Length: 327
Image (cartoon, rainbow, N blue to C red; front, side, top):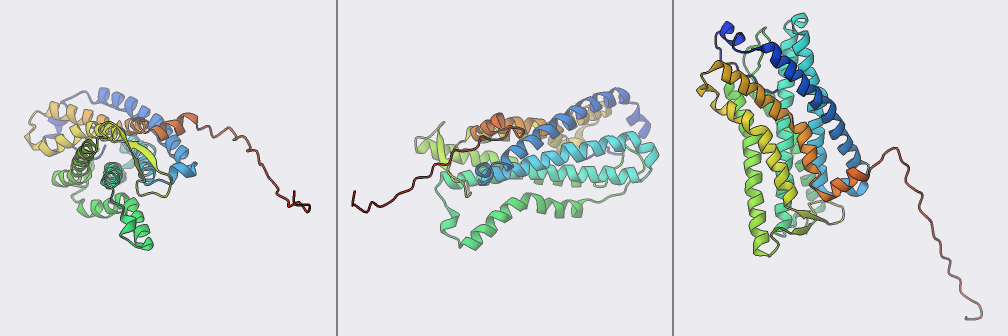
């Protein structure tokens, strides 16, 4: 729902181009699914990983938690906020524009978090594939600070540059309520989608080349993933799947923003914009499904039952005594 595809076309031509009532019904239907199912999936996956000390110890799963948290903020905060503003706009006046702009900015933050978290996780896999261990070249304190910086980077940077780049006037109309220009939208999508997803694809190619040279193409490789947990067998296929899902969800929305001025048909621009928003926001459901390609995450989610108490382990104590008779 981030962004708005208005280009200042005559208001009556814009409002009469499509059946807005039908689009509202379709939008509420899909966003109802995204809100309910997306919140359930992302919250469930997040709880399953965080309640396992072994799962949450690896760097990759820490980045996965960041992705899930970003999706959760989208399905539990941004989407409901969008629906509230859309329905109650006549009663809210200009305050509706403030909430609308807030939902737009939060959606861009979520895009940045999700795409850059995937890119950083793949970069760590590249380091392991090429057997580069930063802990051997850095002091323990510097290594720890570096890991924390990587984890916080997807959250802190967009929180600074997105409000700084956003500008423009706020108009009292729900279809023109926007706080940043088309140029700002282009900048956002290049930074939060194009750069990280293209970089992820390039890094995956580097991994494939390295594994092919080592005879590991299609196989798996033991990786530490810059984490503190036990080594895990990671194949490149799950990363390819997650990147592919992100590209499919973001592609139409990003393409429309980049070439929007070339679209002269009002009806086509509205319909394509509507479909692109639905496709983009489908990632709150599609990304958790893609994470099931990781065997450890799939196994944890399938067998995690928070309402079942784990069976108490059997404590075995062996006492050794020294015989006084030398036996």
